Amino acid sequence: MPMRLTDLSQLRDLPFDQVIDVRSPAEFAEDRVPGAINLPALSNDERARVGTIYVQDSPFQARKIGAALVSRNMARHIEEVLADKPRDYRPLVYCWRGGQRSGSVAIILQQIGWRAETIDGGYRSYRRLVQNAMHGAAWPGKVMILDGNTGTAKTVILSLLKDAGHQVLDLEALACHRGSIFGGVAGGQPAQKGFESDLAMAMTALDPARPLIVEAESSKIGDLNLPPAIWAAMKDAPRVEIRAPMEARRRYLLQSYGDISADRARLADLVAALSTRHSGERIATWQQHVAQGDDGALVEGLLTHHYDPRYARQRARWVDAARCLSVDLPDLSGTALAAELPRIAAAIDGASAL
Image: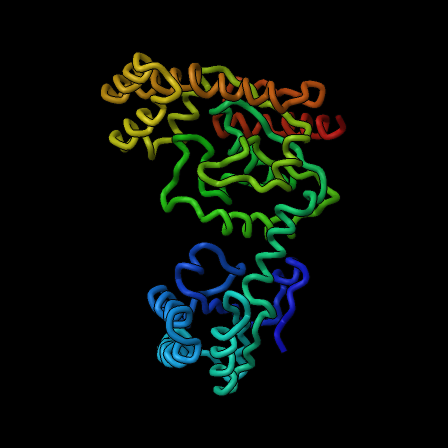
């Protein structure tokens, strides 16, 4: 009997040895049930071909060709990926809507003697749960914002708070992006659906009775939109603002963004991308800093003329000063941040009561 998904928390303790996504690699790359592996019943090209035949020729012909392709592909998966699975192997199989692909694969695996089952409604039933959690329901529990201008070591502080036992959610880590035009990381970002899946599953592991600390963000992290549930909670949340002098922020950023500094061509391209927001004269000055390797001057110029004004405008729009506390940190080195953590935590506790 197909397994029916009624709550995302079911996926945290599934009674199966493995979850198998038999959709095409392109479908899998966009999003998948957490922990699933991809054993495609049809490749990207095969799926397109069968679909075209189904629409333009006949469903019967499409099913016949599809059956041959699925059988061929599953033979390879059984001989390779599944070759060492034991007699009592129990996989959970799904496709787009719990139809022919997952049903066909499950039958093949069951004939071997494995206890294969499918997900009722396939990936679509899982996606509906994610959509409801991220777009339909309110975020569970209270959110606290760790705020501060660019370069105030918020990400490091967030990690220290987590290590100290506070409930923390690193949105930038989930989005695979550091949250600015210079924030791209190797490997790129997930698809929007994949980001929402990761966020929804992270949400199920949280204790709604405890405050959740997240870093201040705009409504987008890189190319990804924060779903309405978390964004609405963040806009209405009390916050603690980290303040630090320019020199400390500059040192921190020079250390944290060394990967970008090492690639001068990429750095020049990123500066050029700001040309729609700043005068040609300012962009030329920044490009001169890039060419001369004067990253300190570049960072200070970007903070002064780009990032700090943007943060100020955003705070003026969203932040209730009566629900915001601040912590001044003269030094953003790792040792100094560790020493200041109790003071930061105390400020968070105080803001939580606002």
